[in-house]
Amino acid sequence: MHPTLDWTLLPDLGAVVLLTVAFGSVARRGQTSVSRLWLVAWVMIGLHFAALIFGPVPGLFGTIASLVGWNSLAWAGVLFMWACVSYRNRPSSRWMLVVLLVTNTLYITLINTVPQSRALLVFAALLYGFGPITVALFALRGGFSHTLRWASVILYGALSVFLLLFQMRVPNGQDLAFNAVIFTVYMGCCIHFWFAYRRATAGAFVTLAGFLAWSAVFIVAPFLAAYFPALHPQSEVWNLPKYVVAVGMILLLLEDQIEHNKYLALHDDLTGLPNRRLFQDRLASALEHARRSGARAALLLIDLDQFKQVNDTVGHHVGDLLLQRVGQLFLGRVRRSDTVARTGGDEFSVILADPVTREDAARVGQMLASLLQQPQDVGGHIVSIGASVGVGVYPEDATDAESLCIAADLNMYADKTGPRKSSTRNSGIRLPQPTARQN
Image (tube, rainbow, N blue to C red; front, side, top):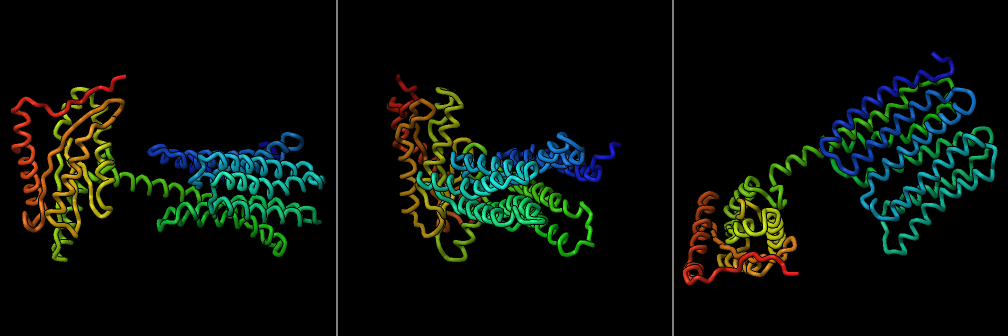
């Protein structure tokens, strides 16, 4: 083996590669923009260890390897931080990303290659302060402001002041400056992560604790070196927070996937509304609440009269869009305490919580049905449908969920076959058919 290579980093590289592969395997099952950014950042951490193995090589190659290694560590931290930003698709957020990547790269490169150049280091230190605040002020002029944006401005402004005060001090000013840069990057990760994942789960706690410990390494290590030089912790001790963060992020992905699977099990995948399983659970809860409080609860069953004709005339794709439209229309006209569910192919159910009377339920049913009497522009087609509504009221019509559903279903069938609709069919007058939009 080459005597100038730092083979002590090989176990760390292997551990990070294994964790990155595990992270990628978990992330692949439910890829999001956040998980993709995290994966790129972990690749950067692997590059950090791989490059630093060649850092001790004399000459230009070793210098380049060291620069790639340390810059990769900073790039990974900036990506971790940016992944936590909910507004990262805004142009100002992309500019902030560019500013932080360029400034960190410039400063790390300068302090490792031309540490004696006061002018260049002062310029780079000032850039830490002026770059983020310039982006923030331009975004503010456009009407955008966010707490995390100003947290970054304050954090990097404090770093700028620290660098200007300490980077040229003898004998260890530049070591303090370098550690301060990496500390700031990962403290920024800690702050952003806390804002983005304020939830009481193991994944959130482990990841936040890992980022906090990761940033603290760059304070504790120089402190021990200055005041307790006899202590020589193994490098694995300083790298442990990285593994804690990796495990925490894997837990977060698994938690998100479990929650997503729960959502899919209880919601209709087309409309996003509660499905029959969740509807039955909420109906049972509504009836139990009404039973305890001595109040009423109402159930509306709404069947789309001419949905099959939409599918047959303009295709199932337009039919799917129509179902989504109907779901959104209904959601926009009921109270937040009520439940709108898709309980069949062209059947929707609405649970009206108390206070409610039969007259209230009938009025809501008529209002929802009237929404569907208006022509709808769906997927470039004008379609017209009708609806039949059945109302069931607890406790007058039934005292349990199953009986209430039966009562509402019978009333809906009576509405569908009532005199008005029957006479319409018998007279030869058809309800409006789906028609293509004329150009």
